[in-house]
Amino acid sequence: MHKAVTVVGAGLAGCEAAWQLVNRGIPVRLLEMKPLKYSPAHKSPGFAELVCSNSLKAEQLSNASGLLKAELRAMNSLILRCAEASRVPAGGALAVDRDRFSDAITETLKHHPLVTFESAVVSDIPEEPAIIATGPLTDPALTDAIAARTGSKALNFFDAAAPIVTADSLDMDKVFRASRYGKGTDDYLNCPMTEEEYNAFYDALVGAELAELHDFEKKLVFEGCLAVEILASRGRQTLAFGPLKPVGLVDPRTGKEPYAVVQLRQENVQGTLYNLVGFQTRLKWGEQKRVFGMIPGLEHAEFARYGVMHRNTYLNGPQVLGANYAMKGHPLTRFAGQLTGVEGYMESTASGLVAAVGLAKALRGEPEPDFTGRTILGALARHVSTPTPNFQPMNANFGILESLPFKVKGKRSRYEKLSETAIDTLNEVIRDYEL
Image 1: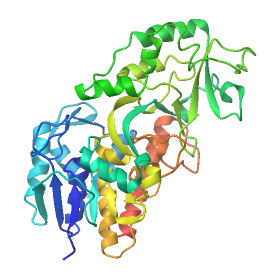
Image 2: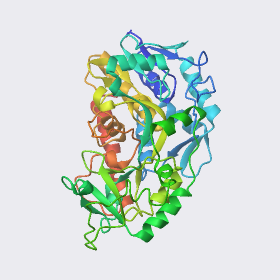
Image 3: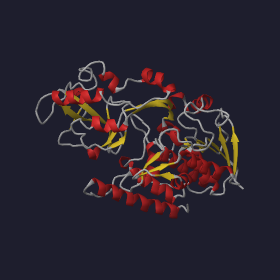
Image 4: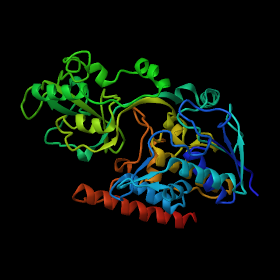
């Protein structure tokens, strides 16, 4: 019998981690502070409580969320299995009955012979082996302990991120490359605006619908960072003389300085993702697609991640984590869920799965699986552990996958080929590592 692994947190990531461990014969001590204590966002005592939408996003293989579900299915994910068993009608998306979903996961784990459940508020990092999956609203005492172990600069407490778009979805006939403010190398992509285009964009921006905040987030948002729509509300020219000022930039199509310029900065090493500089926002996601799609060159942009502004505790993964979600220098202590810098329900599930499968192998003295950057499971883990100039949490998208070694015409065909490659790769990993 292996020594029990302590899993802290019975959210999606913690429950998936526990399931993957017990399925490999490893006992689990599952610790969850509910019902002794609730975070500001949680209400139910059950496991895997969905506090926001009940949608787990798309299922089609031409969508990265669909590919992730296919990978989770191949790895016998408990979360996905319970989601499919509690689905409600939602078109091409997988949406669930929250209570049935939570109940199924709670019953499965609480009655598993290898799971010992304790309701406890954890204030320190447990003795190894352990997986910490306490989510974006981790209890302050445990947050302090993590900060003490990893260094305070390795933790972020506020997620104010600009939207990220895929490079291959930009209209490069309109976008040009140049340095920011005419200094340094040509590292930025520039979307030039005429006065007419700027005014239309401005009107749409200040009239767009905002996402609601939890009460506990409201003060943090306005003290921590200024949203682009709030900045715009101070006057029509505020953006044109602020983050959109075109100083030192000449549009090669006209040979003149544009009225305003939206700049895009490279987000990853591969150059497949770019973020909109200075565009932290609270706009609803549909509004972001509509309004930011008015920017020249972004008319057909694919958003790998929408802008967000909310309370979110997460690690600066590249400083702290390896590609198996292990803490650097502590291979038997792992993190999972949104605390690692993955964003989304199924992404959190994926991190719990990868952390647990790797830990199970490590406890047996066997090589840990390399899910590679060709699968979403592996690409998410690599994203949160790969140094970048401006690390931000990330959800599943095709931009984080390794590029195909050949060209495929058409976005849908390219995505389907990426999905096919990912599934073939995962099947090889399952076979080679006997997963």
